[in-house]
Length: 136
Image (tube, rainbow, N blue to C red):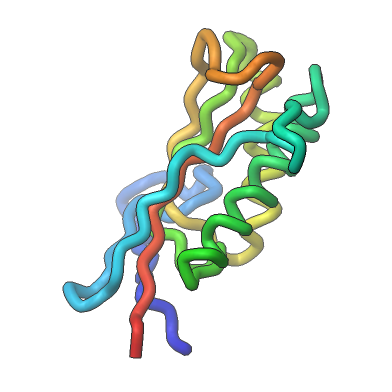
């Protein structure tokens, strides 16, 4: 099935960013708004305590599962927001590199944010996403 998402790039903006600067979905697409994907194990415990990259991997896996439950894949993601509980740029980059690699060629627009704290004990990473699918 063709993707509902069109990624948009601009020659007037820097190509240093590892994502498209904008994305669109047609009016007849079904939008899927995901809760923030947390790095939780099946038993509710926090995965990869103290490990930004490990938590990003688990959060992405959980996001992929939530997308599948809604009839979507990571290729249907319109945009993301990656939250990292740290004031250190290298911690944000460690999480971002995992998320960026997991998306492969689908470089949807994304915002990377350092935050003071996240909701679960020992949580360092959370990934928010919006996706769009064509139900035809």
